[in-house]
Image (cartoon, rainbow, N blue to C red; front, side, top):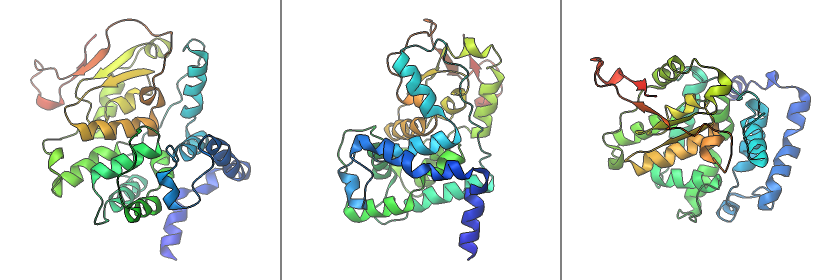
Length: 286
């Protein structure tokens, strides 16, 4: 009973209208037509590349509207007249909803066959962000299918996968050694400090993070800029960054061929070595 009560509090369905909730099944089915319908069983995940997208689009329609905003721009081929960027209200990483969501992600990796690599590949397949067929057992796929909760991630947005990568590295995942992400509340503050311009002008600019990690800088930057890129030496960090862009920043996940951007050098997030305050130093170098 307590678990059920906690679940009700976590989802807070009372904030949605009856009409919104009643429309969810129709929305899911409509979006799922492109993949021949939603998976009826967990084993159909192997056959349905992109099976998570109907859930992503439906939940985003309910919460943020970004996966409606960006496809409209892609269809028009220009950001001109696109209106304000839909804003995401980032969740405090230490809040109860965020900690519950992180616990859900951590539980996904408790299966004896699970690791951060095959979990990332499973998510990328579900988001149609990879063409490589899944190379995991039916048992592990079923475990991921039953454990993963996309709604919690979208409803309580923050940089979860940086924390999960650090957590797995602490448990012996060697490919993550040396990965020390900037705390998300700091990246939000840093981006906000340098994004005080005119919104219509900023969204035409391009931001670049040369040490992107899992995307802790690009995520808050997506509230201001409609084009961004990043690079990193860590292949797993790049995978996780791509996943988080699909969750929260579709214009970075799928940039497409869109006109209307200022053709100038990207604004790089770099460490300012002259500031004398160590790793917290930064600037947007114009």
